Length: 500
Image (cartoon, rainbow, N blue to C red; front, side):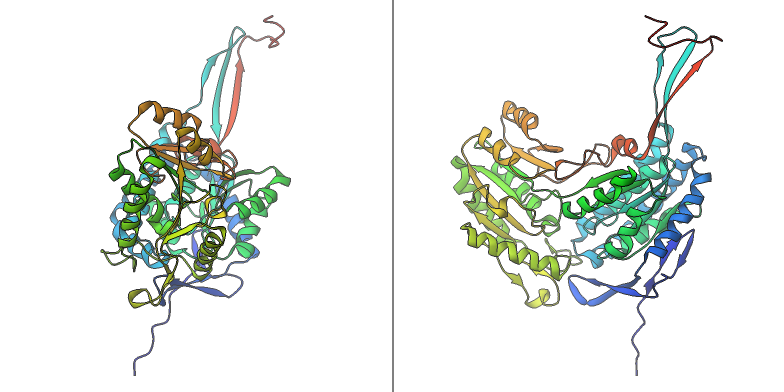
């Protein structure tokens, strides 16, 4: 009689070794498209595990900070090369653990590749400034310095890309890291850490602890030896992170929610706008902080746009992301499915018109997963909860507008400010929108998703706390500025006094 194969148990990575959690416990990571499939078991970490990881990172920091940045860059470059080689395998594992279709998971791994190559290049460009002094025989310059141990908490929807946004700039800057990935999708972070280790990152420089927020995330944020915390997740949890960091004045970067809008003007290329609205609203089943969950459509083209948008939404094939014909995968778990269903009920009660969708998919290939129909509400008021609050699912609210000024007022009238988009052929309208939309990202004739690694990523209001991910902006967060004055006059010179 055949026996079942024991599930693989993934351990913590602390001081260069894969180790068990002090708790002795582990949790299941299951495929959201087919919950019968167990992806793996991951150890449930405790504050004691986090403490061991922080101790290892703090000890490793003493040497890592002194490694020349170009040498740190060589390690990152090797890691990028390994990611290229393993892209397809990592993408398939990512689809299995969090559901989005293969094209999207390939893009997720590619983003990690891009970020790793980019930050490897920055190893020879950690520039400061030299400037003339106001006094004679005096030299003035600034330089970047590393900070120490960085605690990182990352989400499940981009389980390799977002860890790379944090890991790579922190490492190239000379910091060490303790990473706590989302409990719903930890495998991709394990792959990323394994690649960094194989590329030559020394023991203790990168550490990983798995587990939930209260047991593993909170001790990491609160640890006195962690001066830097970078968090991506919901705004309510981000507020808790900020409060935990405040007493010690830690560097704290928060990347949180969004309620993003696509504006479709009466002169828009509707074919292009429809492509963008479908991709923006239903990519990753709407589970993106940049998802286009609102569409403001000019009344002159509203009827045509909505008719064609519904036709496209109804035709989307929902199913297992490993099937190459699937266009939208599942929600991440039962809790998120229930959240989406509750918001659909809220929309109905608010008087929005449910134009398509609104049901869980539970038949055929969707029988064993957390699937939900692409859902569209029409004739929405911009003040409805479904048009104000982040749903994080395949639910789009369509709002009629009469002018660009009204569209911008609607766009800015939410608590978030991550991404916005406008479709128009009028260059004047396009530039007015880029000026007046109070968001961290604006797209013209493209959807609200599609950020690139060499430009800052982040938002305003309840989306973030002013810091940015990616590009040089990330290095600004993971370094401190140091200003250096060298006076070679061999006498006391008093700035602002002797030069008056």
